[in-house]
Every structure is written in C-alpha cells, then in structure tokens.
Image (cartoon, helix red, strand yellow):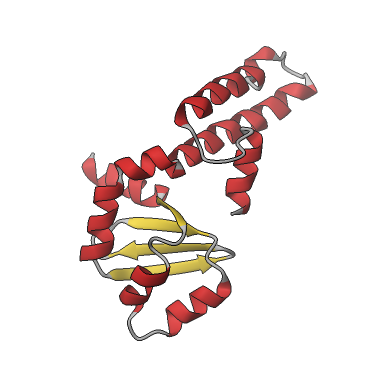
Amino acid sequence: MKRINEYKKLFQIENEIDLAELKSTYRKLVKQWHPDKYQDGDPMKEEATLMGRQVVDGYHFLVSIAPETTSINLPEYQKTIMECGIYDFKHKGLLLEITFTDGSTYEYFGVNANVFKKFMSTDKPVRFAKRFIYDSYTYRKSKKAAEAEGESGE
C-alpha cells in the first residue's frame, strides 16, 4: 500500500486511477524531470535521472493496477483463480505474492499479517484465498511472471 500511495502522490491522484489523466501527468513529469535538460556536472542532472526513473516506474505500476487495466485482464485473472491451484506464495510487509500452477504470479497489496497467518494455517488455502484474498485486495499480474513469459516466448 505504501508503494501505491507514493506513486499516487507523485502523480497527484486522489481517487481512482484514470488512464487518460495518468498519461497526461506522466508526459508532464517526464518533460519536467528529463536529465537531458541539464548539463553534465549540474547537481540537478543526477536528481532528474533518479526522478525520471521513479516517474517511469510509477507510471507502469499505476497502469497495471488501474481499474481499466484490471477489467481488460479480468477474464484471464478469473480463469487463473478458478481453475488453477496455488503453487507457491511469499509474504513481505503487506504484499502477498501468489504463484499459480499455470505459472502466472499475482501480487496482492495490503494483505496484513493476520490474514496471511490464517491463509498459511488453513488446510484449504485455495478456498481461503477465493473467499478472503482474490477479490478483497488490489492486485496486479506480477512483473516477474510477465518477464518469464517474455523469455519463454523468444
């Protein structure tokens, strides 16, 4: 959730993410923080390089969790959560990463330690996840999964 809030603050988003507004703000921020605006040796060049990377990362992240993106990818997501078992999972902070038996990986944001403990202690993790995780938290397909698919497709 911290990551979501930081990027929303950077892009001045208060409510739901609107892709058209996000793209417009992204273009403005890229122009503002482009390192080529500064001469070599200018202390602002290094700051602009770092901010430029953060703007690009933030844009891609926010696009991946935007309502428009999740609705486009909903059929694939529903097929995965309904037909596949859980192959592996990791929890760190408030991020739960679940890898499914079809090889796809999804990140769920805001999953606290109590929910994770219940998830780990249940004898039916898929059933628990269907009831309490899949539709309850902001999620996105993991970049790791997308990179792995790209590697296997080459």
